[in-house]
Image (tube, rainbow, N blue to C red):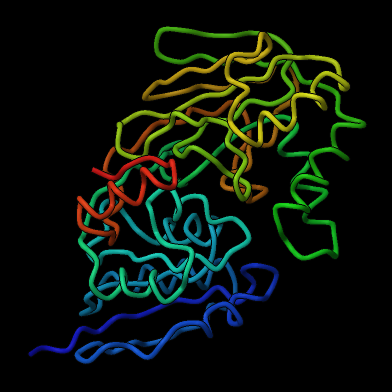
Length: 312
């Protein structure tokens, strides 16, 4: 029997430097599997490692990190990936992995990496070359991210909530023009998020009906509203029960264009700052990534229990 050679790239800064601690839960590989662990030295090095791995004789390539790790890895893949990707969710935000029904338990995620079934899932494009897995947006989210990056606290969902609430205290809504297939909006926004997944930021259920296999992006616009009102609605955004609120617009489209009425606005991708700015066009990349997942029946059952999108 031929040995399965699997390389796993570890982002040591994932989960504020706690990635290796989480990976210690992983058991020894099963017979016939050779695991090669490689630690990246930064975002650019991670991208280089992924690019080089596509030319190696590998059964699979593992990514140990969170959503930001996936985004930097995508920069190293031109077009469709030749070597299937497996995810080990050890980041502070693992929304892409969980939307793909990758188990939280590292031992179970590692089992998918070694014996999973290759499947195509959607990605999103920002401009001609850059791709992301979960979300791009403008507004309050970007301000909250700057607070997070300036904090000494470990990355976590709690820190994300704190940063959003702190940002809200001084936030001034920008005026934007947003267009999508069959619709558009012009006005001031608290935030606008274009997503590929149901959630981002470690579980903020901003677009609860999103799917990673539908060939489309989901859009959530929260129009300008009072700080107190938004504060009282914040728990609904966390739970995904905000979509019927008067100040919320929900749409689905293969593309979304965002323009600022004035100075360019930063557009973070998957929680990473400095990635893009308005004007920007975002497009779905249907089936853009070959990912290792569970067999169809097992996957569908697991997703029904978790309430996340099913991979076709």
